[in-house]
Image (cartoon, rainbow, N blue to C red):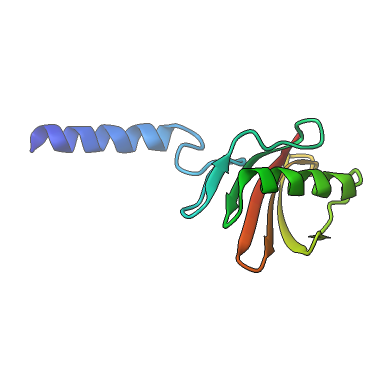
Length: 118
């Protein structure tokens, strides 16, 4: 019991002393349950990457990402592409510049998630 309590106290101390250990500041490549990781799906010279797909193939996700990239214009990201509706979450730095984005595009029961990283 004493070892367990000591380990618990040390773990709490390490987490409290490490900035950002409990809450990540930036994006992380997570793959939700029910999604398939698509590590080779990239577009726009690698800017769009870290894809995952639900109810479709990674090849279809890759094709969609290329279509999406063709419609993206600099800072303007499309919200509707090829019948998909897209939600976008942006991460900003201390100077309010966007440095990453997560795109979740859905059509019926198909979903494609990917990240845009500078």
